[in-house]
Length: 406
Image 1: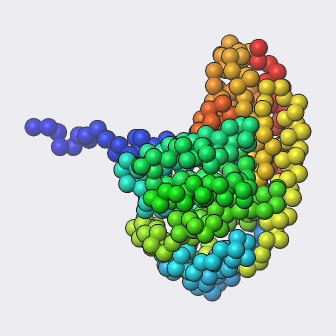
Image 2: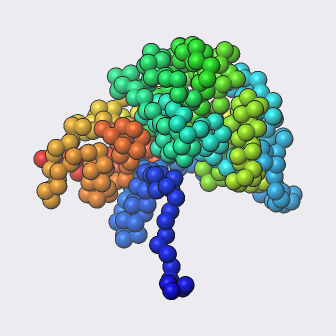
């Protein structure tokens, strides 16, 4: 008889084996490991503001704790927070929603996952505008859908055109996913561009749109346009947003989506079986953030604009980087193919952006994320959400390291 105490080999699920670890988190982990060894690493890998959460938001969380907000919350969020989100959509986006259209989640990432899992069946195709945020494709895999990356050209700031979209739609297309301002490129879709895309979507009634607007407030060109503003497709648009970027609330984990009531109800059902309602104190802080307006966000945006301009000037001194000017968010995303085929001082050949990112980490001690995880294997993403002096030092190190390649 077999030994009953012996452990059978662990067989993980196919879905977890098919899923990739988040590359932004993986690179940050490598950077922390080097730092733990005493190496002075400058990390430009994480999409995290270096600002503290505004004090009035912290005070609201402390007040909520003192007032006893320590119990389970409604799955879609407190009613007054959902109403405040509706008011925000009206004020900032000229969109009319009711609280029944809003689901508050544990970060915009959960809002995105709720929507994908609620809409996608095995075999459904999801057109993902590429370059894209690293988790989009993995969420589609989790839902057993088929991700169809649609690559925008560098010459068009990586933005997909309406004509390119229409050519990619098939009878199996169920969803389109994109972000604007874009992570990782910083590209921002104009009203004209989104209007043309909306006209295409309107011709395909089976197609829905998942618009990630988490970087809405970090916009250097003025107008932010939500594709849900185009009335002909509004009921088929799921708009995701949150507090992590505009209000420097990454660790608070609170985001939300707005959608047609049937979709919102489906997302609420999904969330009810996974996390239930978002943390009570976090929701009270989020309510205070919305009630406080945009002044703190606007102050941060000016700092991000200054840092973007600083980095673009520094990058001009690095040959081999082709870098579009970001219109929003806090990244630069240069094409680095000029370094492919070069050799490091220790004899390794740089054959990919991943090789180059690892070389910069090990030689220059600057952490960044290679573009393969974003659907752009010829690029590297650098976060500019760091202090000016750190950015200067980081790009001096990068320039010196790259100069060693032959």
